[in-house]
Image (tube, rainbow, N blue to C red; front, side):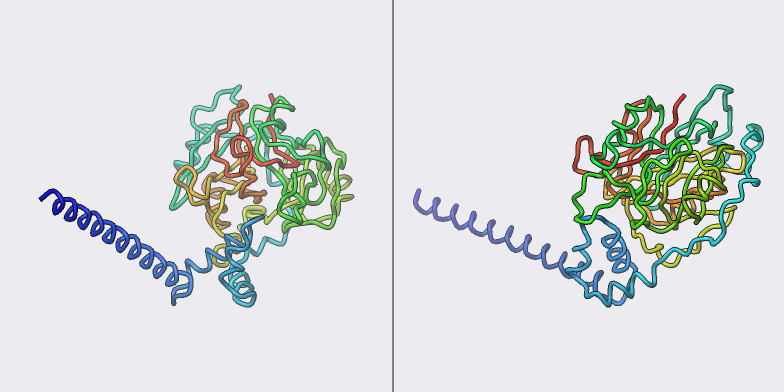
Length: 352
């Protein structure tokens, strides 16, 4: 009798193992089928988001190249792109001394302008939409916004938190991209020209990524434009600037975005300025952090428009996106370094 019970128990265990195996196999086959349908089926939305997202990362382009041939990838990128406004910022359209805190045309305006105190330096606002969550910082005095760099510029990058601490910054956000030929650099060499306190502190001319100069002039107006570094200093009087892009809004005119803009869905950072001079820092979480997939150029532009940006530009995103307030990490960064932050060359900072 005991032997029969043992045999029955073994058979039951074996049956349960088979059932679990078949269940796992069924789930795998179903998942594979769904994946194949999404990637290669008749509907292109998922396929195009997959390709554009992968191709704009530093180290994960293989997620596209291992699944699709180069012709397919190039066709998708051609259908998804951002066509920037052709004009440069007109500084005369910005009045940095005209903040009206009693009148707002939308709930977004109200979030920025309601009950602003005379000594209020900034205000943190949580933002969210379909598939994304993030943070917007309204900075009321544009003269407090400046560029800061790693203390070892050209040799080693530093996290935005370290840059903030080294510069006694109340608020800090990542700024330019950086030269990364092997997808494994230390964030030391910024793309393009970096201007700090009216002087060029670094210049790497062969590594521009869309857009052009993003910087504040001596009147504390955010200027976006495609001009030489000499004009940046001598004609436009930029006191603090980097080079990156694309430009999202110039003189109130938004970029023309085809598809997702060619940048996919990822963590994002952007900077903007309203006509009343208020500066906007925007950081969007992504890659599943904070229940956020991320956003593309369409969503980034729309958020900036909602909060009244008259000029706005995309900054480096992905694993570089980071927002620091009072030395605390506010967003949910995705890099593999300490606290999820990646070493970068430059940051926009706000100091008292």
